[in-house]
Amino acid sequence: MRKLLIASLLALAAPAANAIPVRYDFTITLSSVGGTQPGTGTANGGGFVVFDNALAALGAPGGRVGDMSTPLPTIDLSFDWLGLHFDTTNGTLGALYLDSFGAITGWSIDALTPTPGCTYQCVQWGSTDFNVLAANASSIGGNGTALLSQAGVNGVAIGNVSWIQTEIRSVPEPGTLGLMALGVFGAALRRRKALHA
Image (tube, rainbow, N blue to C red; front, top):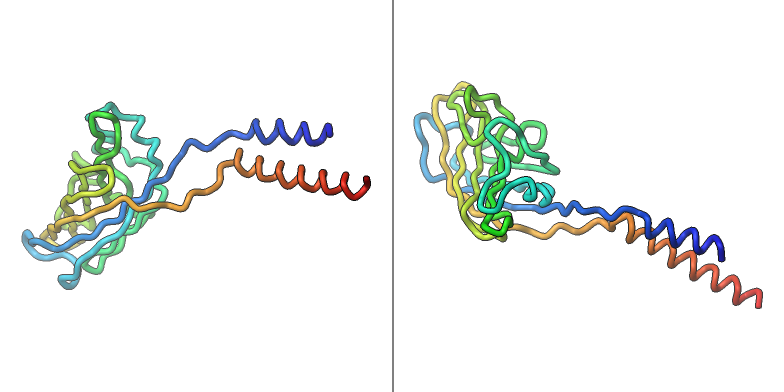
């Protein structure tokens, strides 16, 4: 019985995870080109970004989280358009936009490309760079714009963005796992007592 009490206390003491990852999927339709078109073809693009929704707490309601030079923590990212691919090795979450209640209503992702004076939400012609801006909508979806440039090409692709928030399968919190272990332990202990009675 003493072991059961100790196991109960350990399970209750396990810290609960506060982080909730959110995923936004997006598609891009090429709308125009400035200068010479970067990449290859006229194919539509798209991808996704995953980040911790607790980042919203870093900003004030009605404001924004992030600045033009510091990337925000990004759990996962994948973006393909016009033959170019970006992921967490060369792209990042750049900013979050919040409504008057502090809920996320938009975001931007950017290439990890140093641009003089403006690293994020700026695209430098002649460098491999991008910006996807999905803002001014509800927390579950909306529209936006995308820019894409390529090293050695004097031009930019401009696209229309459509995005939605999608569900991520949740990972059990440590406290939940502890309670499950406690339940299994308790059931085994009860069965053992029943067999010996």
